[in-house]
Image (spheres, rainbow over the protein chains, first blue to last red):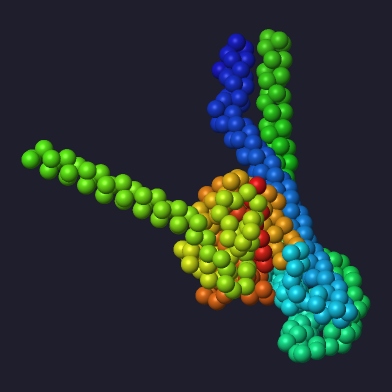
Length: 239
Length: 180
């Protein structure tokens, strides 16, 4: 047992044993876990970017549609006022011609445009603005009155013009910063998207932690192997 | 005797055939020209490169004439309405068969002056686009985006719902169609 020739062989055998299957499997396992962690990390990062992009697109789309309906309503109102002014000067202009709608048709078009603000998908957002629904109802009621008065023998266009002008001023006073008022509503609309995004963000943090830990373990393992090998080589040289 | 009977029979058959063909030709001609002149308020005017006219160089339709065409139904949701809606109206295909267009492109214009971009007639026909005059069984008033609302079957092609260019073509308050 004390034979000096046998002693180094036992050491070499131990060194080999140190690099034997279980330890290597462990290293490979760690490497696999590291790769898995990295792929989840990259996947989560990609999903976050994707959802971010989707939320941005949705907001842009909401903005475009909401601004469109608001501009259309204002345009219809401007055209109606113009038609009323013309009718006030000359009742003959009430009729339809090749290029424009008749006054009763314009009243209906304006009604439809303002109704768009409180119905359909846009309404889901616009109705969250305080007081907007009541105000729109006021305009729609006035348009109904105007429509029924058009059947009178001598409609009082001027009175309707004055009232519409007053409503327009009220609208301008209360809702000039409508786009700014809509911003928090857009954020609220994207709530579901943001929830999924936060889920992926948590996954990103967890996987990044996991990756760092695994990276450390793998480095430590590799360092140990290299150390054992260098020890073994050193012993061989000494022999 | 038999020979003369045979020749008489052939002559009679040929005569009947010729008369039938003439009648068929005349009836076709009458059908093709039978674009009725509108008696009520005109709600749709088709102008441009068309082969059938009823008022000067245009084809004009009142509600009754449009209703005589086969009604198609589209059940869909839209961005501008609440919940699922049932739209009914003649298909663009049937309307085009009536006016026999000479061109392949079409543009729609609304009462408020809005116009769609030029579209191909084939696209509208292939998608089965209709000119809706009724919504949920009721005639479309101007305030309901009538009297005509061009409608795509978005329930059959869900991609169209998010396609912005299709949204531009869902023209309401439709007043006229131009063909080139």
